[in-house]
Amino acid sequence: MNRRESTVVADHGIHAAYIPLAYAAITVAAVVVAVAPARMLMFGMLAVGPAFVAATARPAAVIGVGAYALTAAFVVSTWQGLLGTADQVLRLLVIAATTAVSWPIAHHLRQLLRAATVAARERQMLAAVVEQSADAIIVTSLDGVVTHWNRGAEQLYRQPANQVVGSTFARFLPADRQPAFDQALATLATGQPVHRDETCRVRSDGTEMVVSVAVSPIRDESGDVVATAATERDITEVKQREAQERLARERSARTARMESLGQLAGGVAHDFNNLLAIILNYADFLTEEVTEDGRRDLSRIRDAADRARALTGQLLLFAKQESAAVEIIDINEVVNCSSELLARTIGANISLVCRPYPQALPVCANRGRLDQILLNLVINARDAMPDGGVVVLETGRAQGQYVRMSVSDTGCGMSPEVKDRLFEPFFTTKPADRGTGLGLATVYGIVDDAGGSIQVDSTPGVGTTFEILLPLAADAAGPDPASDAHHGETGHGERILLVEDDEFVRDLVIRILDGNGYQTVALDDSAAGDADVAGAAVLLSDIMLRSRSGPAIADQLRARHPDLQVVYMSGYCDDELRHRYDLSAATGVLQKPFTAVELLSAVASALTPVASRHG
Image 1: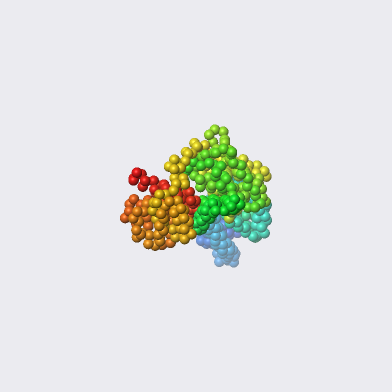
Image 2 (image 1 turned 60 degrees about the horizontal axis):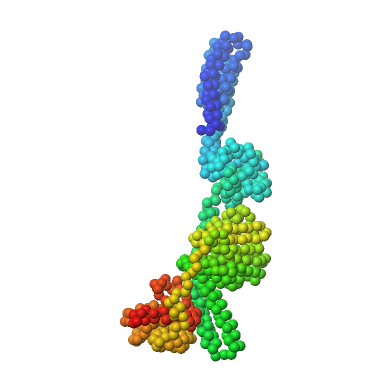
């Protein structure tokens, strides 16, 4: 029960005490009238009783008191000798008339009390709902001063009502939201509600949150707007969850696009690598048959083919997810090999400058991940220079046993606030359709996995430098003596089975092998599994064929001839092929495009176990 309803009930109890007072007053008045001379006209005192009881809002009590007053008036007037006279009748009529008027007054008051009680109960229920609501319900005056602050508001803003009521609500707004708040108050003053699907608020501890707001004007009895009532709900977690779900969908779509790109790049690279193998080797064939000027021209052709070979490898590396196998690699080589593709990526208005260290800088890392680091950092540098600029890739020795690799730009730079959150997952300053906030987080994870560290130096308006330190690795072991022995080694009449579905590549391989002491037999891939392989030493087969795979042909042939050695050729990604066809690390895979030396070396390596067994 609220305070107003308690007041109504208490007032009703006080009025009920008027009833015995009315009876007592009539009794006393009757005695006084009876002993007083009739001419003193004190009889009217008896008519006060019913009117007095009307204040109790009890019609039945008015009738009872009126009947008692009529009885007392009849007895007193008879005592005074007025029985049957006009005076007696007039006195009785006065009391009856007073009772008749008092009854509807009491009835009306009773209805008002009942309505007040119902209204009080409704207000009590409404107040309980407002107070117990999980949403923040805030009442303010038209100038923004808080007049009511429920428990939901206390929990949402983490501040009790006694510290807020009487102060302006603007204290919970970000600095840039004050004009919008003033505009909203002006709109509410005209009687129009205000709704915001999402807006920012600041808690008492300074943390920001996102809320949905619905504000309605409060009118007085005359219809004038006197205050505002706002309902606010915290949707920060909802917005974060929506953002995470959106990022997950974007990542899924991006992954699907990258997988499609990887498949496309693999197919294109396979055919392109076949063409490059033909260009490279036939350029070598012609070198011995032309003049000195012709050799220089062929040298340029071969250099262009080598660059195309490197670009194809980079395209596969960036388009597909490579394994995390580590190797000893010179970081200078990584920067030099990536520079051409990166220069094409960043656009013509940005210059890419490479400054490799003059000495080798070996590190133990995964080549694909190092390229991924460079790609992410250079792309970020490009985005920081929309009007053009310079990106500098530099390597060097750092204090202690560390290798330094830095990426610098002349872009817009970063504020200290952005710099502090730079490596947080999903944090980005780019528009939603241009960044996910995962690029630098990925870079940080790769560097950390490699046992290194990354530092950032940035000045707004000047530029940014990312410096990566990686542990210096021991120098890579020298070339394998066995491999050196095979360099340029020729055959001694060994029979080589060749399965290649590209006619020009097949002719090229036959020319190289037959010209270096081998006997090459070309097999059709559709019937190679049933071919006569008696006396054959090595099967040289492309992995991806039109009718069936090279490993399937090898398995069928080796079932009849277990000693048959196998060398595979392919222009696809080595790791992908090994995973798809379950090829062991010891299985030789000759990557296209290959040179004559690489082909002869692979065949000689396969023949080594045969020579050992027959030695």
